[in-house]
Length: 72
Image: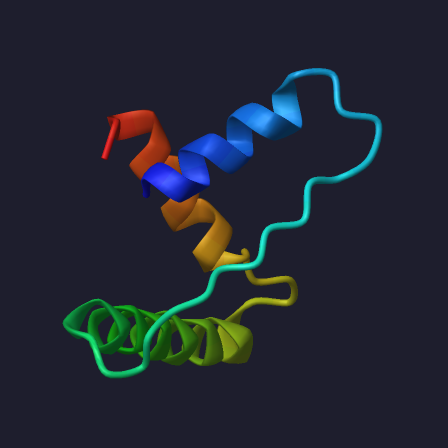
């Protein structure tokens, strides 16, 4: 979440072009397993929403915005 907060700040401070961030992760860490599990859950929710909504929200962006707003 801290990384996403920093990216958000970079985007706000007068950037003329979108900030592109590349995150490198070691695949053999607990953090990577957690990240993969969260992405899997969000993808499952998105697939369910696509069946009932004409234009489903981008849940990943909603989750990040909410986490930043809560100061996570």
